Image (cartoon, rainbow, N blue to C red):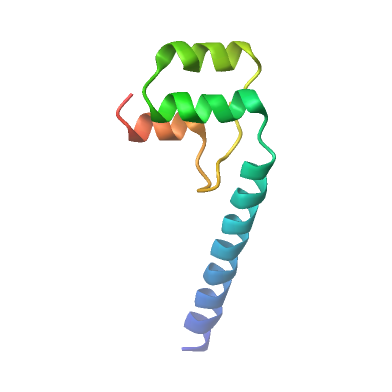
Length: 77
């Protein structure tokens, strides 16, 4: 029983850390990276390409802890 509590506490702490990290990361996204996330969300391939050419960070995560490529996959692309 004691192990289950420790595991639950560690998991909860990890979720808080991921949440805070995602929020911090989203606040520090470049303009090109923000445009990339918007373009993926709206299925605008021309804007996706333009954002990448403009230097969007393909490894960046948004406030939900998701990368643009993961969002695209989730949307079926």
